[in-house]
Length: 186
Image (cartoon, rainbow, N blue to C red; front, side, top):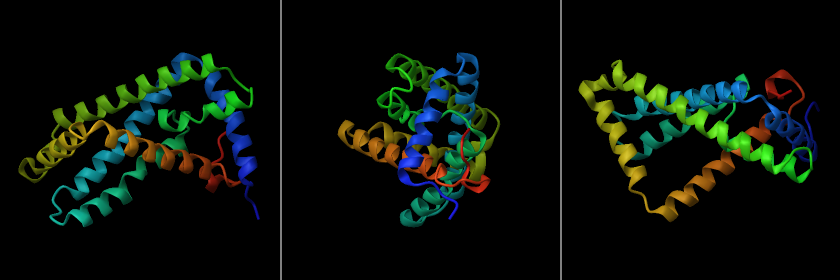
C-alpha cells in the first residue's frame, strides 16, 4: 500500500511545520491571503447553494458538503491557513522550530487569512454576488453572520475547537498518501 503510517504523517508535518515557520514574511502573507480567499470562496459557494432551501437540515447538509471545497483548494495550492498551521506546535515539540517562529507564522497567517476573507466579502458585496434571488442571498448571509456573532462565547469556543480539529485532521489526512492524489506537501 502506498500510504504513510500515522507516525510518518506526524513526522511529515513536523518537517512541513519547520518550513512554514521559516518562510519569508512576504511569501507567507501572500499565501495566507490566498487561503483566506479560498476559505471564503467555500463559504460563498455554500451560502449561494443553500440560501433558498427552506428545509434547514437540507441547507446544512448542502453547506456541509460544499464548504470543504475551500480547504481542498488550500491543500492543493499549498496556501497558508491559520487553523492548519496551529499544528506547527508539533514542530516545536520536536524541536524542529522555535515558539517565536511559530507565533510569527500564526500572526502573519492570521492577518493574511483575514485580509483574503475581507477581499472576497467586499467583492461579493460590491459586485452583485449578494443580489441573487432578489437579495435573498444577502438576507441569508446576514442571518448566518448574525447568528454566529450572537452565539454565546462558550458555544463559539467549543464549535471553533471542533472545527479546528476537523481542519487539522483533514491536513493530516492529506499527508497520508505518498502520491499526488494524496497531496503531500514538500
